[in-house]
Amino acid sequence: MSDFTPLTIGTATFLPGESGVVDLPIGSLTGYLPVTMSVHVRRGRKPGPTLLLTAGIHGDELIGVEILRRILQTRNLQSLSGTLIVVPVVCMPSFLNRGRYLPDRRDLNRLFPGSLTGSLGSRLASTFAQEVVAKCTHSIDFHGGAVGRPNLPQIRISPGDTVAAEMATAFKPPVVIETGLREGSLRFHLRSLGIPALLFEGGEALRISSDAVRYGLRGVYSVMRHLGMLPKQRKVTEPVTKTVFSNHTTWVRAHQGGLVIPLIDLGKAIVPGTKLGLIADPFGRHETIIHSEFEGIVIGITREGHADEGDALFHIATTPNPQRAEAHIQRSDEILEEHTDPLG
Ligand SMILES: [Zn+2]
Image (cartoon, rainbow, N blue to C red; front, top):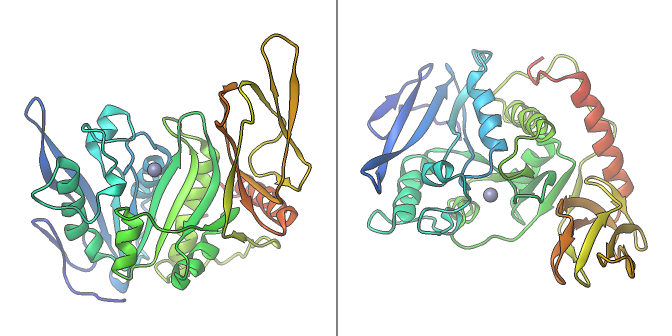
């Protein structure tokens, strides 16, 4: 866990106290354009964990890219113990396309551990898995919602990953959700290697929401303190309320097509009977209120003004104490307002 031998990624080797960038060759695109993966390494002088921070597995999810860009700008890491490996854009081909998928329409997050003789995405997954993922002891991977479907900042962990559950608590997101693993995902691969992993979800694709960026930044530094990579904070400004854990989420769907008028927002507590929104025909004849059937917190929402029957409208994390979660979210917002500099 606190290996302090030379770290080799691609053709570069990093000793304690050294930092730098490696551009891993992945392949070439139509037009003879080379594809590389830019891997940034910061090694402290003192031993400690090797934390891997990744974003842009889906090329249209930009919030994690912005969070990692800010971390790379931080000059305040002289006291770092252990190693940070930061990959702000894992999937450059889809980032260049401004889309979620690879040019052949595959999802990189279903291709792990990949193969060096497979498709471009499979080669990318394989190089990333062997050169980068295999070198880390802990991982945080950043994602966001689809276009027009923002997510409340949240952490997802795998059931039974107790080290990740402690990291998630240290991250202090509004909600921690235990979700199963999809075969071929990075999280599935990390689990097979026994590497504790957090998956951050926040905001929506193609947008950079400052709230989600602040939650993410604060969370990363908080996890680094928890892992002993950064000194503990002198001033303790811990919220009284605690992060809520949920092991079940469900989508409330449109029971018929029509215009959608939401009556609730992200982060709100709901109970059976809470009014979530209206569905109406465009001609003023029908209007139906959508009531919640569950107790929980709204963690995802559609911003689209119309829906076909069956479209997903509200994503709910079911939890027996939603008011506590809502209080934690409000408290977190206040803390974020007061302390925008996570190292401050
Ligand atoms: Zn994603």
